[in-house]
Image 1: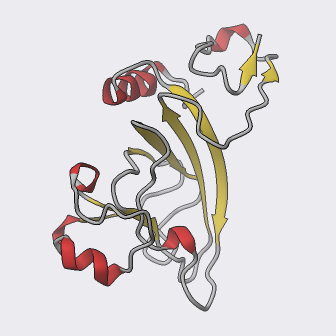
Image 2: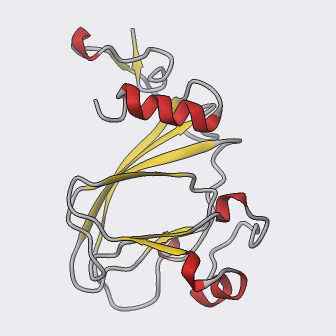
Amino acid sequence: QIANSNQILDLVANYIGTKPTLSYTAAWWSFPVKGSLFGPENFHRDVDDIKFVKLFFYLTNVDSKSGPHVFIKKSHKSNKLTMLKRFSDEEVLLKYNKKDILTLEKSIGSCFIEDTYGIHKGQLPLANNRLILQVQYSYLPLYGEKYIPKSSNIPNNLNLDKYTNRLLFKD
């Protein structure tokens, strides 16, 4: 319901310039582990569509020891570090000012929308587990995803937009 709320869909449509497609959902745990950083725990850009945004929900409290999400302000509009690779903190700090680093420490139930073409990462948890939910909105279906829409047994009172949810549900 939240991912399909009029307020969220209007905000997303205004940002991407058209009625959005709900193109991906996922939830995952991050656990404190010793060793090197894993994939999305390094700074990177997502290149999932021409224009897209992601809605993130913290399903646990997230503080500095729980692996908060980190975003470099205005990097979604920048031509710095546009290679498709993972970047070290040092590489990012060579191109961006430390004051542009936004660390999202929030309580359970908090959410935020982000253009993840901007440089971002999920920090490695130091002591506490983190559970996060992601909902992606885009112009089109994501390349390489195999969508199998489920029969819609959703109560009519939810009023889900058929176009926005076409990859997830069928009539």
